[in-house]
Amino acid sequence: MPPRRRASSARCCTSKPLGRRTRGICGTATVRWDFRATRVSLQFMDFHVDSDRKTSCSASIRKGGEPIGFGQPRPFRFQPERKTDLAMAMTEKEPLVERPPPPSAGCCCCCCTPPRHMNDAFVDKYLDGDIQWGYWNMPPRDEKTLAECRMRLKDRMRFPKTSIIRSESDMEMGFASAKDMIQIMYDGTKSPLLEEVPERLRGVYWMKDNGVGEELVVIHWAKWYEEEKLLLIPMATFMWAWPFGTPKNAPFGGTMYGPQTTVSGARTLLGTGKPPPNPGPAPGNLSMVFDSLPVKNGTLQGHNADVRDDIVDLGTFLPICPCCACIRGKFTMELLSSESSEPGSRWKRGIWWGLGTCTPLEFGSYTLTKVMKGNGEPNEPYYSEFLEYMGDVPLFAWSGFVDETTGSGREYGQPI
Image 1 (spheres, rainbow, N blue to C red):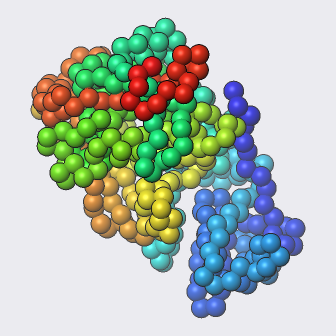
Image 2: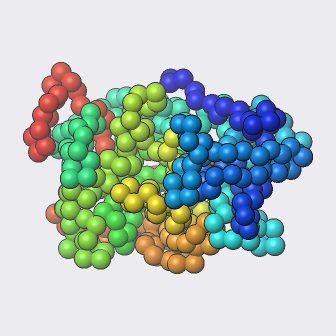
Image 3: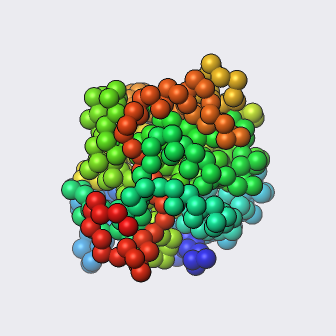
């Protein structure tokens, strides 16, 4: 297991700990930050901080001996004393999963940070302080079953370079028909954890009407924290499938389809596929928090190097435009009625955009539709509908890593 990466303490220039919630003032602008949650781009030279714990200081933010002036934003992050976080959560009854504040208690502007699904206290209580959580923290799946699923894929090959991602990858991808891929994904993710996950979230799902070139996803190989009503889902093998081509009735005319686009999207989600401290980005993970039990309505957040950070912003989806990070997304899960008796057969995956917590613009929403039940049976009529939609277009999934003794150095399109 990789070494755990813990957040370090942060102190201001007076060598006194900053408060957990701090107000900063610069000129006529007043901004509120939660230093445990927010990355702030500072575009001013001098500022004054005044903490809730009566600690204050004045400071000039400098980099390389020179002050950072206007027009030169730099990412800046404060983190409080971690040793007190869990104790404070217990004594102050602070929730381990942050909920949206009522309007009267919220920020007066649209640029405040949305509530986090997991805060420091959650990480300490459930994740043993490890902020870089991923599939490597999960109970291992059956190796024989994984090997069999891998062998059922066709034309296994190294993830190729693309016009967007020009580096090679040690990850392996494999192909299958729509029908075969549904079964492979179910078999490859079935484990004792499935029984712990709410029934409405078990099975294989089709991302119906998703304008991005993604088709199938499994969310039942995950950790369920019932007290927090939170599902933590790692990005792992056989959990996601992308089309290697464009279905006839693809959303928006298939604009976000095609091998270059879908392979680039897959590699963006998977990173290097390797856990830290390996160089390069590790696979991310998702979290879902629901309002009540049984699960019905909730929100979804994405995480990369730190499970406390939500990466659902336009800058993440458009790496060539990092300034778009201020345009944030709110992803929702809303249970819908269904033609099937299978629990959780249809969910509205709402996608809303805006600034901070103000996300009034809906764009990109789709219907998360269960095509295979939690017991492994086809979920009709959606199973047949998906097969008809895909036609002869194959799907590919991450199946592991290239066997260096047989597959090292093979080129794009050449099977292993």
